[in-house]
Length: 242
Length: 242
DNA sequence: CGTCTGCTTGAGCAAGATCAACTAGCGTGG
DNA sequence: CCACGCTAGTTGATCTTGCTCAAGCAGACG
Image (cartoon, rainbow over all chains, first blue to last red; front, side):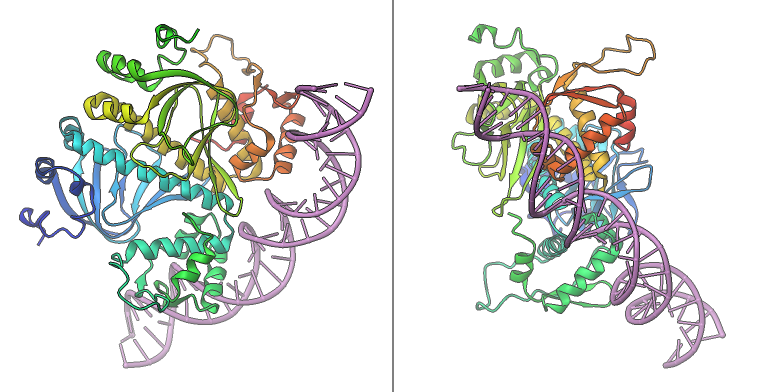
């Protein structure tokens, strides 16, 4: 299935990932050093104890970026979705761990090989720089959420963000102007993880979910499945992020 | 004073800024496009309404990076000190404004010229990438502070950070092992700005300052002058950032 | 020397944390 | 296939931190 000949041709993130933002030659150079691999939920894919640095592009699944302090306090400082790049070049030590929040398909490159390409292929470096800048923008947006938003706004923002990044782009507006109900999705995070994202307690998450359900904005089925019934209202409650 | 011949030779941040991380030729290319300018406190130097994009290296003074939402909520998402780079390449719109927190000396390059150099001088692009990665690390550290630290820890962390970035590197340990008292510094931020940094209210800042003073950890004279009497204790209260 | 603005201090309040049951998914083994 | 049990999630009661509102104070500047 995942043999080397199927590496890129059928890659679902081919049009959005780092490798699509570079020229023909660089794409080939990249293809030569990648390995498509499966990673089970919970595995650390970058940062922390890792000795062999690797970088990766997410093909399927969600990665959480976690900072942990000696006293046990934990903060999720970012989520990465399919087509996102994971890894911290030019730094051996990095107190942020990238952990598989769900089972993952990733495109993994060895650190040394990737850094080599960075030196020889300026277009790859440029694409990386642009991606890191986006991560920086996202981090700063998230800082506003952490610092200034209420519990209600935080939960609404996160659900809206997850929904948008997990829905394969609505390709214009096909339907009439009925308020757009989204497909049911599997939440990539537990309540505890959501709490770690938003700097709240899991009890607070639970209460906010209850509130959103009672307003008919989202529905849940089981622990992990949720449906956004009214994205407009959800965005309204998330206090206009951009 | 600031004529073109004094541009770089006597630059106080020559050894730390972007321009020092590049080769001889790139340093010359950069020198050709820079202007050393003075900027008064309060001026926006990047982001927001700016039509002519410029980038800059801070030579003296402090810049705050501010996000503002339509409802008036404000969050400072970063501080930039001498030798830091300010500006957001490859994006025309950017809802973060870089504002002079104090009067500034900056080394300013026009956007177009700098982007041109990025295309022709890979070492400049590399230096920029490394700098942006550091900003990203800093942003993520700050997310932990915003999300997880108490008011006391937040204030202690900020004071420690400001003190370290405004003290010109202790060059090994010259003194005996007396607890190191730092020189008196001028605080680059008002109480309100500190509150916007830490996601607290100015009253809370005031109370935390009072507490730190009563413990003999810092002293203040007037509104803006402060002295760290015991950096070790200050760091202790800031809950070990790294 | 007065005034204006930024800072401090106090009193009461509220959002979210904490503590404590309790319940529902979901996997397991009988 | 169902009962069991474990863990994740929910719900309620109470507490705490930092916010809000209000008054008073002091440093900087004319």
